[in-house]
Length: 106
Image 1 (cartoon, rainbow, N blue to C red):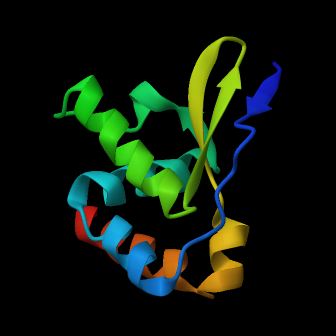
Image 2: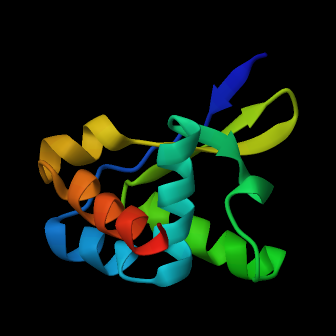
């Protein structure tokens, strides 16, 4: 399995943009599923209930906030959570927000 990250990884945004990216229920679910997957997963496994173009829009917002990065693994697009990078900018944010989302789904 060969993973090729995007060449132009964006810096992690400030707290306002991070919170704005995570406030949407579809994006929060995508991040929750990435956490459950251990940090990386094929795009199609991270959403349901929205179309492919809508999902691409949500992935773009997460990527621009610095929460995720896009990878190509053996010709298939994956998303990877940049948890350590986000934690450097906003310590505990992902744990708190994803933890709350996880409790809401239990």
